[in-house]
Image (cartoon, rainbow, N blue to C red; front, top):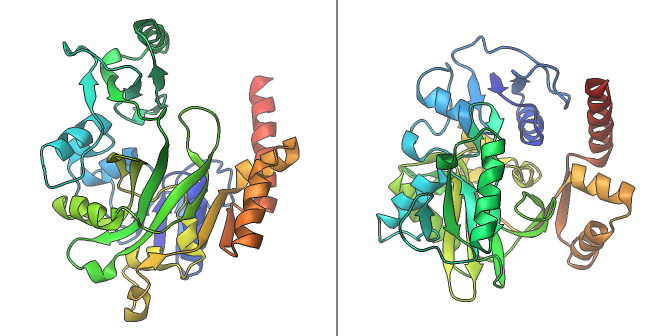
Length: 346
């Protein structure tokens, strides 16, 4: 059996290793991949397609890519559109809502601080900025000027309520959901411990936590309403008073290696190889995931916070810890990226 991924990212390398354990060959369509994933163009309509970003998932949903994939259906209007997804949530009062938001040209007064946020992660092949916290009208005008300088339209952005100044936790429910048969579901509830840089950024370290807010049920209701079958990550923000949805990634996400080292149940479900025994494993617990690139850079530059947290979780709390990609490969990748940058600058 063959499978194809359309990036050569950390996510793609996780899929490559997870599929390898199932005797499934995974290839990347990306030229000159940084990670050691073999390159090949798709040539088999029966092959599986694996998505780590929304652009190629959208192509598959439009019938532009041939192969087997999940989710086989997803509303195009909600795919990688954070504005539309929050609007859809608000239209169904039985579902957990998102944050308050305002259109870029709204006549309603903004509540400061607010977030100036991109509706999409990508525009064509351009990665859009994650957004900026605005605390005044002057901040808004400055960041709108930045958007114009980037050659982007302000209509690709919107304003969103900002709760980051309050005591809060970024928590994700992630795994595999089958709205037709919940016995196939498997989830992990993870809390962000470290971000990869200041401001709005991706998680560099997460750990599994108990589901104190019934997030698993909230997530199931949302995914069932979408008739969803496939891998996903649903992000929440939890404060002392509220539980709100941030965004849905209906694909493989950054930290899914926690399933690779916990029986590989995620990919078994994706490839329809899950057994009755596999289906008994419906939740991942006592697990810590660390971005191997972040971990390696932190050690090389003397930023010891990640090492301290690692020791606390691994040695004191006795949690299983996965550094992904592994340090040896992460070091090789960092050197490869550095040399490629030097060559491009010459």
